[in-house]
Image 1 (cartoon, helix red, strand yellow):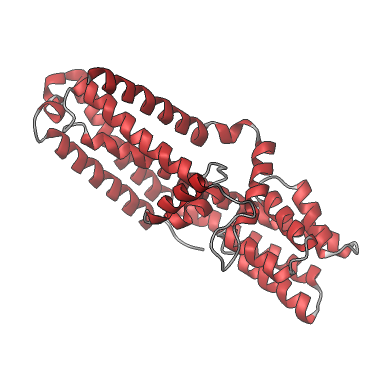
Image 2 (cartoon, helix red, strand yellow):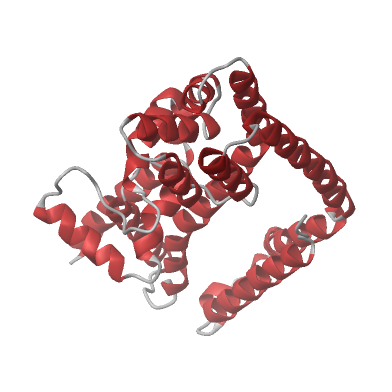
Length: 318
């Protein structure tokens, strides 16, 4: 039994380390490779249709994806991973998340010599999801920041007499991810025979940015009724830039609220560490007593809830 426990700890630790590498390190290693893989994955996400692939999946992969769909929110997991810029498949992400939680629980069980009191460490399985949501928010913010520049480049291409498809292709080649990846995918879909409206709807489905629907609507109206698209996009880019200026002012005014949330989240950990350094016996009941781990878990949950409430109070939509 002891040998089986050590083997389980080893396997779970290896999988957890792989998950940490894929989520925190691999995406930064080669941006060109990540951009190419995201371009390949982009065709899987179509507006108004379930996630599908033009490639036939084997039975094992299909069964794993069906199991992922049963999990709450699992049907949209692939889309969230794509928005986060992660090329890992949803089944593998779920497997690595479970391995991370299992590894934390097994290691805690070995050190504390009590599997029941180590149950709170299973919460480590949520760390990959937290990292995924953080990367998703970061990538969507990057798209929003790059969007005015992409509109300016597209406007110049149109005023030079080029077509919309050529302008999108040029923006896709010249600009970095995520704008470059998404615009290049739209251009490729149009070249393959898909309508402009359908390609832009797919772009809007893949990218969750509030300014994007205005661009999609403007281009759709122009392709249907005609008009000066270059002037429309130029005005849209100006409005987005002005909104960013106002957003910067709002962030400066709400900086104190965000700083308070960060301080309140870190302070309990700092206090526990300081008290342990001064008098370890004062803190030991948190893991030696029967109710200590549950009290610590409750306090941790309350701190997390308070953090998100403070952040939500300091967040103002512009």
